Image (cartoon, rainbow, N blue to C red; front, side):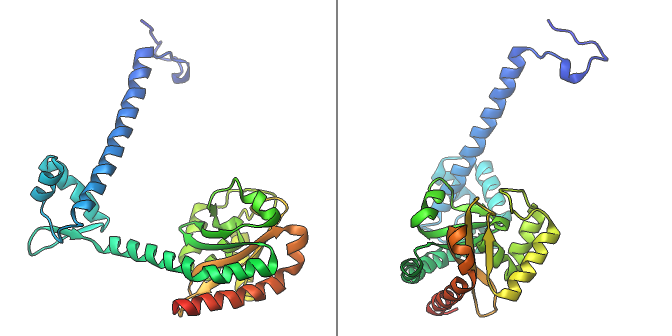
Length: 277
């Protein structure tokens, strides 16, 4: 048995192998339990696809789980407005936040469908990569992308999500979307490549410039040797709900930024009009 002197530093202690193995096992068991709970919560939602309102006992019986488990799941989901409790009947129904999420998903699907002809025309006119993106907290998510030329090689191994401060799309949406700007300010500015924004003061001055110009550009901020230019898609309240951008090699795209921004503005206005925004 290993003994530790009272004044022995914690980092030098030797813990029994069985204790470490038990600790890892407990963590894995906890993770599995969390995943099972998520799956059960999704099963709860499926129950409402048939009935408008259900009680705790109904959920427990349909999913063959304890009433206490059903009550805990429903209470947690109600706290996030995924479901809500009818104060008159005491039964549960789908909540307003689920409606909001569904509406957002539908709106984004419509956006892609409506934007595609315009994106194809931009791709034909410029031979640059064309991106359509939406804000998601401190990030930008590219929901559609037409790849071509050198830019396609760069993007081949990249994901569809990037921090907003490293992209022209993220910057232009933040300039016209206070929630997106605040989310990135609170998340910070981790460096990515040589010219990435790295401070709050730089972020705020960049957004001021974007509002003055009406577009954003990024040179060597998300990928070395790559530049982008983006414009916002604005609703009737001049609030950015998406962005349209072009991406290509810096030596070719950077000198064309003002002209490309004008093309993008025309395209963005056409998309918004088609959406009735």
